[in-house]
Length: 405
Image (cartoon, rainbow, N blue to C red; front, top):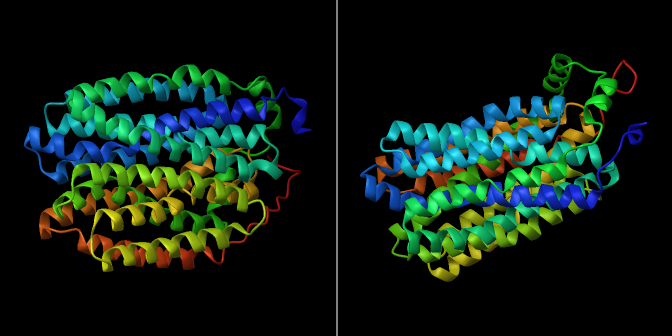
């Protein structure tokens, strides 16, 4: 019955979706490279910069819920177009903001809204509707791997642009690059979406939310996702500064972030592919526990460029690899009718974790002069997330009405 509507080809969905995620996530992962140039020239503290990025993550999380609702109702295409325009405006504002308040509004609120409209929950909604369930986890892994490739590809480019152009012109150039998302969105314009969606609407938004929040596996997945956000945003934003404080060059930090992106191409794809064969709760528990082990070893061994590169490579394998299994479980349990919205709610928890990771990093650094407390907190949270995901059951919900979604 679902296949009665016109379909986009899997190749088109994955090519356009992967390219959009490459740009959107790749640009975002480079923001840590701008911390020192901006704070030094503007005379701001690291907490000022970190707070703007923390606001960005909360904005992404909150607006992502409503962006998901809009994408479920009207299709991903319009949301992606709006996201591309907001991204360019936010990056231009990040370059030109003269005060911490305007910096927080542009770098924080605007770019956060842009990411809500151009990243996983929106792209995964199209994947969920257009790609068969038996290939869905794999396809989500491909899209997540694309985001990692964007990090690997764009990180050294952004680093070189800052060195050669200066941080402000580099940001303005990146703003133009973000507009490329708009033409790519046309490739995800689903034919017959509105007519099919109106006919298939068997569950209201209110009922879908009540069902999800009464279902323990959804709550456990959402709680675990908090830790993912804490880990990746703290490391992405603060690792370059942590390494500079310890006497390593900025190039080591930039290369480390690029290695995280490169190795996460493998990790994200593998997590998606394994999700077709293994229970996803075991995959998630392993990822979170392994992160704690990798961070602990990194802190215990003597710091050198080699130890940083080994840490970045290992962490890269675990970086965004939580995204495909988490989203695949949500689609598997609840179906795809309200998937982008439910994914947005789960991702909001991820973004609260991101806020805490990036803000606590700046706050505790300014308070104590080091990142030690945050690293230890990251280890403990990883163990907790592993335990939280173990009880998750992946069976579809049974509804009283005929097959919703």
